[in-house]
Amino acid sequence: MDKLIDKALVAIRETKNIEFKSEFDTTSNQDWCEIIKDIIAMANSGGGVIIFGLDDVGSPTGYDPSPLLAYDGADIINKIDKYTATKFADFDIVEKAKEGHRLAVMVIRNSPIPIVFKKPGTYSIEGNKQKTSFKEGSVYFRHGAISAPGTTNDLEKSFKRELDRVRKSWLQDIGKIVKAPSESQIVVVPKSVQQSAGGAAALVRLTTDPNAPVIGNIDFDQTHPYRQKELIREVKKRIPEDVVFNSYDVTSIWYAHNIGDHPEFMHQPKFGSTQYSPAFVDWIVESLRNNRKFFKEAREKHYKLKH
Picture 1 (cartoon, rainbow, N blue to C red):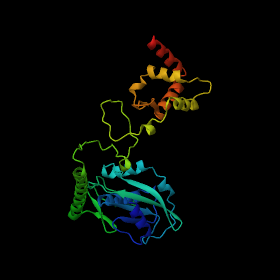
Picture 2 (picture 1 turned 180 degrees about the vertical axis):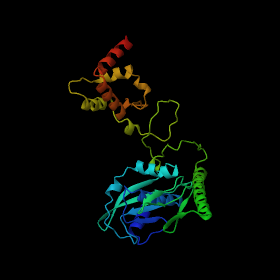
Picture 3 (picture 1 turned 30 degrees about the vertical axis):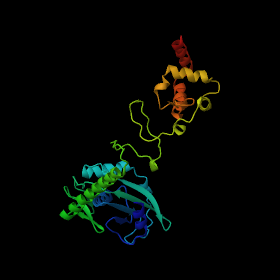
Picture 4 (picture 1 turned 60 degrees about the vertical axis):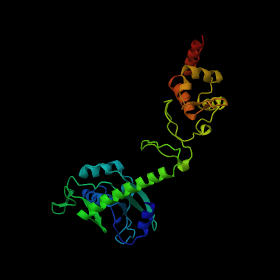
């Protein structure tokens, strides 16, 4: 979308995926109905950008976009939902500039399924008359530089666009399988799992499940950088100076709270001393903040366990 924004900023006319608005009143029901129509039409047509503060030929109008830039995105989602019964949130509003003038740019991404208006976009005009921007049950698409009711051809293009996207995704995945070494295994993971950049190790949310598989090589020197000496130093930086914290406290906390069962706090290398994570430092400091007797109680529990 960055390329499309750059293209729109130098464009001298509106197109299927570029729309100019000379101004926009965030308190006007009329303006909201008209802009929602354009947002849905662009989303149904593959996405696009709407630039607020440019006239029909792309020249700055001097419009102050501050109210729109400060507008809560959740409120825009709710306004769209009011007319479509769909929580469409696949858009962003960013600030840009042209010829020294501030602009608000709304970036709209594709909706895989065409969005239908469930309620008419009606607003009042002069003379106590009513005007309708879009009707209930209508599906809008971009026809050139105009947002208009869709046709059979528009629906066909929308379904084909989504089919092409799915097909491309499948082919990419099949390509990965074909190129994988013969001894590789196929593992299905949730969509929320992110791949590390460039195939290198990445910081991940750790689990205490000992049976959970490890995906990728974790660099414990990055995730658990502290030996006991460094751990004590980091904790002492963040606790009151009159509070004693030494190696015996580390040992007491270890046994009193079964730290060995928390890989997010510690790592025991095959050769070398135990390594600790910044999360362990945070947990110790927070525990002391919530309970001033935390160290004392850990020592007492450790003593009882030993005897």
